[in-house]
Length: 303
Ligand code: G3I
Image (tube, rainbow, N blue to C red):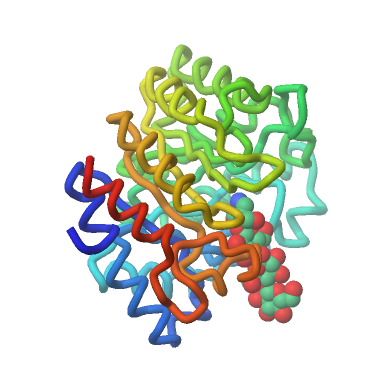
């Protein structure tokens, strides 16, 4: 196959990208995005601050622009994200305790009912674990509502849209030997044992010199999958853009049947949150295919 999406589809997987609504008027951007990818994540437009700027007043205009562009071009959509310590609107940042817990529930219900039946995977909870060696939860206003906030979010999400697959999504959970990875693994294991509805784990996979790709990545993917959840690579970028590392990431996903797809976090280097000078993506700022692109395409085609 000659595009990333078609090549991934040969093994029943998808290949996606993050889309920014403000770039949908850039034809260089949309031409590449439409040609290469068959899954779309809104880079910012479905986050809490974007969708509920005032309490109880939802705004889906930007989220719908991304959603409609994707579906009109035959792509599926990953929803990102419903409960997160960051990108909270001011009104939510100032809440605590039971009123924040209720606001979280109301937010999940409000956003998921708008997109009910339309979203393949939702990142229900994002980045809830702490960096470093504790393996425990990140401190946040949501965490301070009680340790059960994550399972409440998942139970609320299941009831709101039973058709959506529900994911826990985080960064620096790629390296199997890291405490943060083990913390998330133990939570997912516990959720599966107790029947908390969780369907997938998203490995963001932002690789850089502080959190480099490690060959135990395949163990991470297969270990999560063995718990009975799908695994998705949800925000892939590699600082420096090593073609060899990109191939390793793809091959590790292809080696695990429940690794359902890969999303890169932007189209061209110039679209990356990291800045174009770090060369993290598959297309350069002019939209030309990089060596990393060819390496990914070949890996997908050799599956
Ligand atoms: O659009 C406004 C603009 O109007 C304003 O003038 C400008 C001034 O700051 O801000 C613009 O918004 C920025 C937005 O990106 C759009 O460019 C925000 O400040 C900026 O914070 C926001 O950054 C996003 C970041 O999440 C926020 O947390 C990045 O685009 C986005 O790539 C990044 O994505 C996250 C995932 O959601 C979760 N995992 C990590 C990943 C990378 O940080």
